[in-house]
Image (tube, rainbow, N blue to C red; front, side):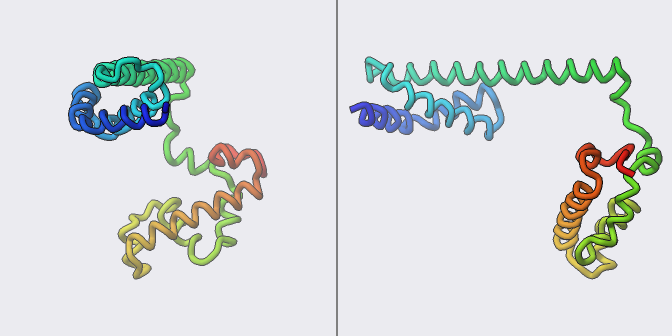
Length: 185
């Protein structure tokens, strides 16, 4: 009986899906958010179908669920923004918000990295060295290696994964934090 009631409610709501979608879109704007909020609201409606006593008021009941879902989204979004602001204030006060100059980062990068590069499979080491360490253009590297840009992207991704695994094996915990100011040597 409860399943039939929930099914009937969902059928009724799906008949008005475009109006429901428009209602949410006016409040949040982003289509991906509209889909998420509608999906959450449909789930809530099914879970609380037993609380609907008058099936003629299903739309009013569902609009109330939608309004609550939109309010929940903005409440959580606001809380996230406040957390981010507080974190930024804390970083600013401590002075940790400033990034070191690139040449300083290179100087403090883990020395193990250069020793592990030659041990990587295939020509991953060359791609990582040229793009990540020497700063060459990916388009130029792909052209010189006579491979497609997509192929280069795949090689670079796999090379980075292999290097990360090698660094974690060789350096342990310090590699989990980006290998800056390495203490494993």
